[in-house]
Image (cartoon, rainbow, N blue to C red; front, side, top):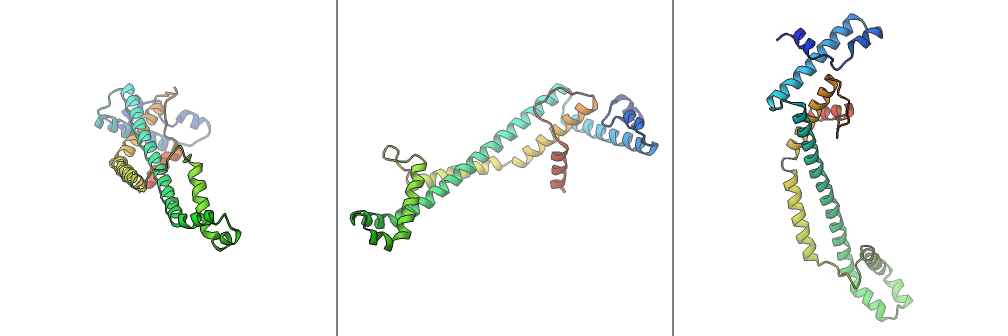
Length: 213
């Protein structure tokens, strides 16, 4: 199968050559555009064949599913990272609260003596900051603070889940990008302009090509 034959059966292609000619582009540019279009088309067709994709609907379904899987995994990783950060902050304040608890008790027993406060201002300030943090999370007499052991267990569980999610993350990301790029190319090749769940922008494509180097 020659390139000229491919060009005929795959028109219209990525670059609207007739428009470019009307804009005053020379023969050199036209030849480059033809070759560029054919290469893009051929690469896409080869990928579709190797992936066993024989219809546009199949391509659309697979690209949509890949995006859903990838975004779902990415969102869950972000949720875990957010919770791990919260646990770290809780543990830090737990440590501060425990270290300053006795000083605070003595301060209360002193009747909140001003001289005692000035002598232990730093510890009392830290203790109050820890208490304010717990209050901001809704922990009070009706909602008990979690134990340090339970926080450690939750950390271990979430960290393990995060590692599992990252396993195969790169492959899923690459698969999603390949499908979206293939669909984007087909949409351009055949002038498909209907709304789709997700498209590969030129910036995203360039960014991914850069990271692959």
